Length: 160
Image 1 (cartoon, rainbow, N blue to C red):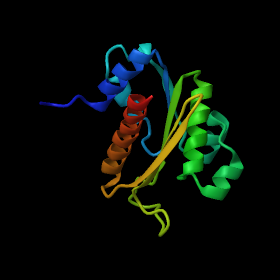
Image 2: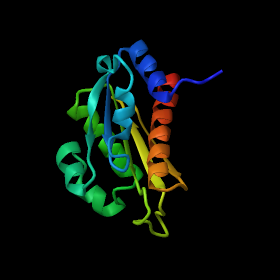
Image 3: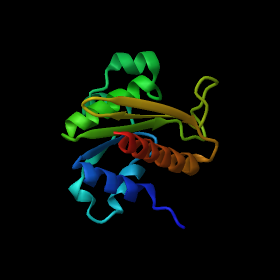
Image 4: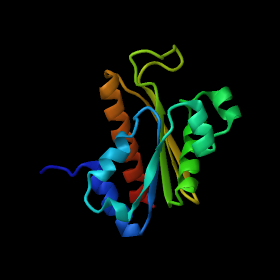
């Protein structure tokens, strides 16, 4: 039996709850929003995305604090939680998800190697974050980050 792609599962779960989704993307560059909009009727629950790649965009568009970026770096639990909260508020949605990572091939350090990725989720009552280290090339890491972020959302929606 073939399992449904996560973007379809997300859509069904959001529709069941009457919730609206907003997405903040950095390393995935809009891939999650692309996947969500591949589902017919997604306009009933998908408010939109903000692709905030640069620090300045994270601050101006999502309300991420400069201090948080300077202290923790863009690829951190603290930043993705601020991104998720910011996009949820900016797009007046019930749930905001965010992802930031080092897609590669460059940009990695010993503390944050290529593939290091954080994803966050924000609702009015909860916030959740998770991190992974993916081991693919740039496109593979982007795809894995998008998949893991959608899976985090599915897991959250199934529990709440």
